[in-house]
Image (cartoon, rainbow, N blue to C red; front, top):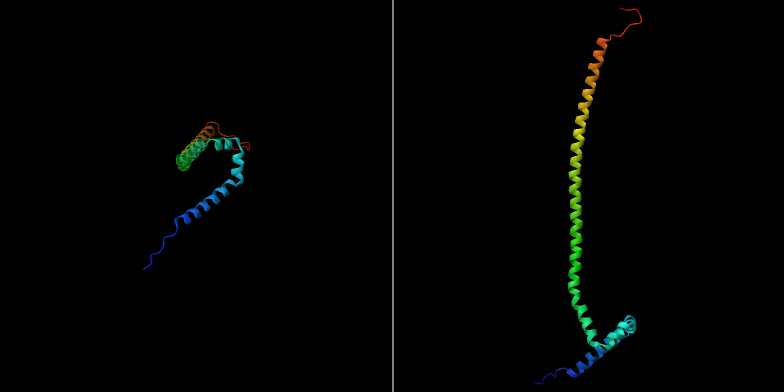
Length: 141
């Protein structure tokens, strides 16, 4: 029985190194990367690799807390929006019921005042007609 030969690790490593160098070259030839590397910050980080690694790690590690903070901000805003809508609905409902009660009370008061004024008018006009009877100009007694 013949043993199958394992693929050559040096050949795989050379292929991986070739792919990696192509990836690095494509990143270095990107126009935005070239523009950044020509800036003062890019030149400083190119001369200080420890600082560049520190900044890179800081940015990578701060992504999760910043993401959580933004998620909390969005959820809080949504909760406040829903709360405001519910509160507005409650205020409108209570205000509508209060307005209905006030209008019913006003209609009762206006009916009572109208009745009182009408009865007062009838009583006063009857008393005036009784105390001061109208005079007939046609000669009737």
